[in-house]
Length: 112
Length: 111
Image (cartoon, rainbow over all chains, first blue to last red):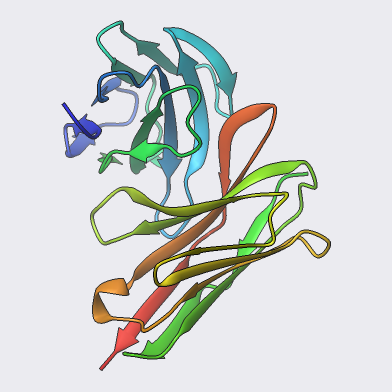
């Protein structure tokens, strides 16, 4: 499988709920990062996983958490959703030695 | 600190050259990237340059890096309507793979 696939494409949640976003990377991509892109802004780094362990985190609270699985899939979980969490969430993956990430098309999350 | 700045908007005529500029503040930046984002889509890596290079050319794309001024530019030759998109400059450092993005430049190409 080539490319990075994210699901769902769109999601509407209520404030206080929890959400899980999913990402499927191409075979061999052992490094995955998640980004939050608010409307009209550049993507902001949330965290990165390498071989199923978190190895870098941006300025996001602990209610943002993640998992990476051996089959090159990963998840972003957000608890206690806030209105400001409304954004496009992007998954990006690569082989550890590569320079450039391959991005998915994103999940558009709306919190009401 | 980490900060990447870009102008917000650029409008060019089809067939002309486009130049998108970016400035960054982190002197330890090792790699600098240009990504393209079309409406409703993710980010597409266009090109990247190492901090020890001054220029890189890839078909219609030319990247210039002035490390002294921390200035990066992307020139698109013979701009086409299909080039209309938002272009993001991004940096990363040797110690981390995380990308620091600018706010993006919206390129509009008119006939």
